[in-house]
Length: 620
Image 1 (cartoon, rainbow, N blue to C red):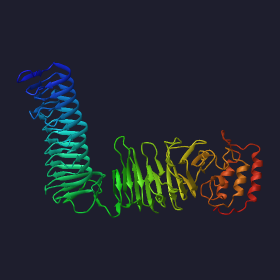
Image 2 (image 1 turned 45 degrees about the vertical axis):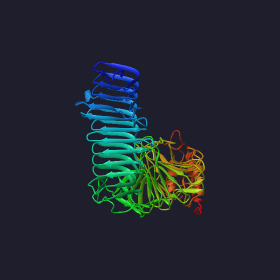
Image 3 (image 1 turned 30 degrees about the horizontal axis):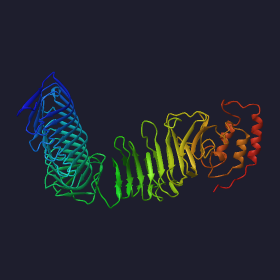
Image 4 (image 1 turned 30 degrees about the vertical axis):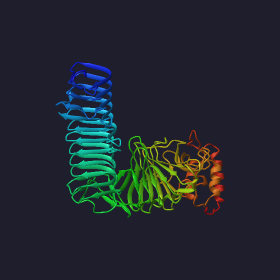
C-alpha cells in the first residue's frame, strides 16, 4: 500500500484484517492511507507514518492493536489518526490498544484526533503524546479511557500537546504534563478524571472551562485556572487564577495547606459534603461555599468540629476537639491501605461524637493521643494506633463501639512505640458501653489490643455497660470483649457491671453475665461468661464452696465475680446473698429447679457461714 506516491486501503463493513504489523507510510517517500469504515482490524503493531507520511480515517468498526505508533521516524512528514464519532452509540468506532505513542522518535511528529459525533471510544493502557518527538492529541468529542498513565512530553527533547473540548471525556489513571520534555494541556471543555495530575517543571496546564477532577494535583510548572471547575482532595504548588471567575471544589479531607492560590479573589471555593479544607492562611478565596457542615481550617490553631464532620485520609497536625455531633471517618482508596493521622491528638470535649473507618484504613494519634472528657460520649470503631510513647486513649467519659458492617463493632488498638506504652486508660468515672446480639465474635462489640514492638499496657476502671440486643444468653456463652495479644498486659477491672441498665443477673434465663479477668479459660483477656448466678468458682454448680468464698470476702469492695460479687455492683455484701440462696444446689448441664434432699443440709451449712461473715478490707 506504499509502493507508489500514495496508496490506500479501506476496511469496510464485514471486512476483517489480521496481521502482525501494519505500516501506513512505511518508506521515506511513501504516502499511505488507511480508511476504517466498518469491519475489524486485529494487529500486534500499527505504524502510521513509519518513515513516510501516513494517515488513518476511522469512522466505523473496531481497531484492536497491541500498540499504535503515530509518527515513528518520519522526519516531520506528518502522521495522523482521525477517529470520527458517530451519532449513536451502536455505530460508534472503537479503538482498543495496549498503548498509543504519538511522535515516537526525535525527528518524528504525529497527531491523534477524536472529532465528529459524540460516540467514539478509545481504550488504552497507556498514552504518550510526544515521546522523543512532537505529538498532538486533539479530543473534541468522544471518550478516551487510559487505565494507566497519560504522559504529555515524556523525554527531554520531546514536545507534547493535549487539547480537550466539550463534550469530550478523558479518564486516566494518572496524567503527567511535561515529565521531562515540554508538555501542554489546554482544557477548554469536557471532563478530565484522573488520579494524580502532575505538572512538571516544563509543563503547562491552561484551564478555560470544563471540569478537572483529580485526587491529587502536583504542580512544579504552570497551572493557569481561567474558567471551569477543579475538583481535588490535595493540591501542592501554585495555581494562578488570572483574576478569572473560576471554581475550586474540595473533597474529603482536602489538603490545600501546601498550595499557593494566586489572584483567587474572584474564585469560589466549594467545600463538598463531609469535607474539610486545610489552608495555610485565611482569605485566599473570594468566596467559600459549604455544601455540608464544615468549611475551612487554617493550619496552626485548634480544629474544633461539632454538628458535622468529614471523611478522608492524610494528616491533621493541629489538636482536634470534638463536640456534639462532630465526627471523622478514615477512608482509603479501593484495595489500598491508608491512614488518617491526628498528629496533635483528639479530645472529645462534650456531647456525642464519633470516629470510625471505612475500607483499609487506620486512625493514628500523636500528641497526647485520644482523650474522652467527663460528660463526653465517643463512638469509635476500626483500627487505632498511637505513634508515640505518650499517646494513648484516655477515657474519663463514655465510649461505645461503632459497627463497621451489619455486624457489631470492633476496636483494634495497636501500640507502635519502641518503649513500654500504655494505650488504654479508663478513669474511675469512665463507661465502656457494649452491645451483644449473640455469642459469635461478629455479633458483639469487642476491643482487640496488640503490640508490634514493645510491651503494651491497658488499665481498666469505671463501669462496663452491656446491652443485650434481642440476645438471650445460653449457659456457658463466652464473649471475649477485650482480646489481648502477646506482650499486652491488662491491669485493674471495671468497678461496676450493668446489663440492660440493671444488675448482671438475668433471672428469667437463670444466668448471670459474669465478667472475668485473666480467667484460665481465656488467659490475659477480659471475657463475659453466661454463668449460674452465684457460681463464683465457675464449676457450673452453686454449692457450699461458693457460699464459703462469698462468706470469706463478705464486706470486700472493689470486687469482681470471682470474689463473690454476683450482681456486679463491685461489692461482696447481702445484695449477692439472694442469688446464692435462690440457686443453691443448682448445676449444669441440667438446671435443677427443685432442691435435692441434700439441699437442706446445704442451707444449714450456709446459715452457719452467714453467721460467721467477717468484714473484709477494701482491695487495693
